[in-house]
Length: 296
Ligand code: SF4
Ligand code: SF4
Image 1 (cartoon, helix red, strand yellow):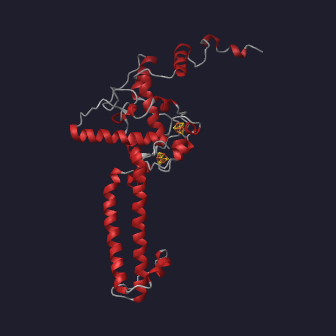
Image 2: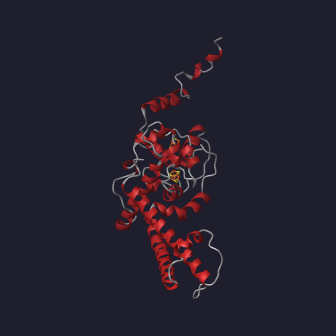
Image 3: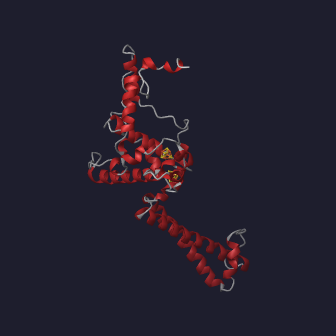
């Protein structure tokens, strides 16, 4: 919950209060409307039932029709102006998800969970190493020039849309085994950090143009301890109601650490060198691999 302090908490409270006020005005408007319709006052003709707000109509039966008409109009204007003002607030708020949830779900990754994205530049190198005679097409212009992601500018548009679609509901963090066992990792925080950094970069680009740089990166928001606490189990992806994929961002940040910075936890460092030397993560030479079958 440490990520739900300061602005995220204020934002959530602002949204809640605004929605309570707007919906109250709406219900009150319809309740008064039903009273005025029953009295056939002015232009309030019978126009159908109000299945919810008619239950509170009794609160307004003791007032004059002129006073109720003023109240009904006041609620109508409050609601419509409130909605239009609230729409302007959405892009600055986590509530932006009400606009992005549908497109984000439409573009969600339908591959089997656990299948990692291919790295075109690595794939190419491996093919050339395994068979130097292979003829590969020229590298595409879209081929990334670095491994993994250091900053939001290295993430895909879908990963950035994920960040803007997050409702901060915390289902992912509740399901995360790393979080449940007291580790630093919270997939919700990964999404919130991505959005915070994206907005910081966006403000910088607005001021200094597209070559903006401030010497910062995603690693000023997300620590290595958080990244390596992830077990890649996909529970967060499964739990998200709008198919957000925090794991793909974690994997891309880890790829940058491993392949660009050679930063790996010591346990993994040993495994990597054994794979390099023995072709397997275990401490046995390839020649000894079948020996287990010889012992009775
Ligand atoms: S994939 Fe990583 S972040 Fe997501 S639930 Fe599993 S351990 Fe947590
Ligand atoms: S479950 Fe999805 S929407 Fe909810 S906090 Fe996690 S990433 Fe955001």
